[in-house]
Length: 173
Image 1: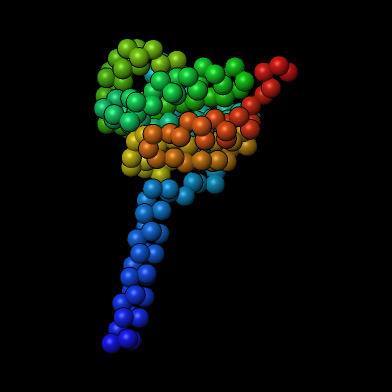
Image 2: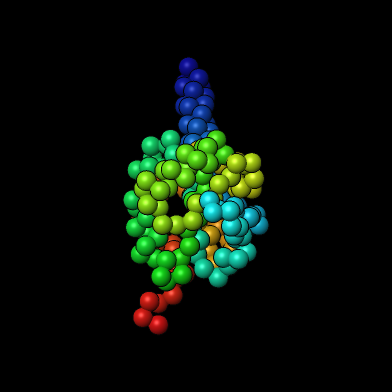
């Protein structure tokens, strides 16, 4: 009987550890060391690459017009962009492939979104970033091109600001 209790406790501990490991991977997927070289097609038809943005911190934000957390974090992203852009920060928001371009354009105009919006109709950008199964998902990319943070869910703005600020130019310089 005593031996059975020990085995039961061990099985419970192992099951809990497996669940915790699975939840950790699900909630905090590992960030790619270097994001793939990606070309973004912006709403105005122009193109920008991650390579062209090297030398400054970049936030790539995947979102959808029908995603409540994406809409909720929009004012924070706009403020982040306005505050940090003059110091060298860049933000590119990528509309998910299932979002109709005209709906995205209308949404961006209605909400006066000041940062570049990429349209990913063919899903090439989302595929390049690992499929991006959930929105919002954000990637903070350091000036050297390496991913500093991958975040799924409404972005922790304080954490994002701390990471981005390490790479910004001194506004008084």
